[in-house]
Length: 225
Image 1 (tube, rainbow, N blue to C red):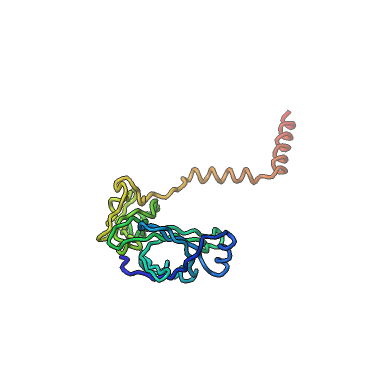
Image 2: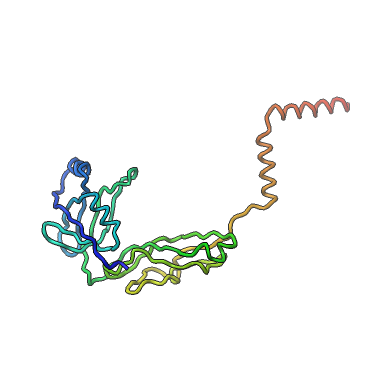
C-alpha cells in the first residue's frame, strides 16, 4: 500500500508564451499546473530531476511546496516527448487525505509459468492491464497483484476474481471485464506445412527452368507424332 508521501518543491510561474516555455525546458525545468480542491489553478515549474525522482518514489501522494504553502496532491496527467520520452508538462490535482479519490492502478499477474495451461503449451494473454479503483489518497496501491498459477487451458480471468487490498474498491463491471485469457497455441497441421513447402518450391522455380520443362514436353510430343 502507498503510505508515504514524497515532497516536491515548485516555483510559481506566470502563464507565458511558448518561447518562454521552451526556455524553461532548456534550463531543466518542467512546466505544470496545480488545480482542484475548490481553489484556483496555479501555474508552476519544477526541476526535471526532482520531478523524476518524486514520481519514481513509492506513494501516490506528493506533498507539494509552493510559495511557502504545502498541499497534498496526486499526479493527474503527464505529457512526454514522443521521441526522447522527456516530461514536457505535468498536472497535479489537490486532494484531501480523508476523502477517497479514483485512480488507475496496474494489474500484475503472478505465477503464469506455473499454471497448468501454460505448462501444456498455452499462451497467457493479459487483455486488461489497468483498472479504476477508489481509495483514500494514501491508500492507493502502486499495483494490484493476482496469482494465475492455477489457470487452466481455455480459462478466462475476469475482474471479479481480483481481490482488492484492504480499503480499496475496484470499480467497473466486475463480471464483464476480462483481465486475461489462457489460449491454446496456434499450430499448423502437417498438411498445411506440406502445402506451404510446395508453394515455396513453386515460387522459387526460375523461368528458365520452367521454359526447359515446356521445351522437353514439346519435344516429347513431337517424337510421339
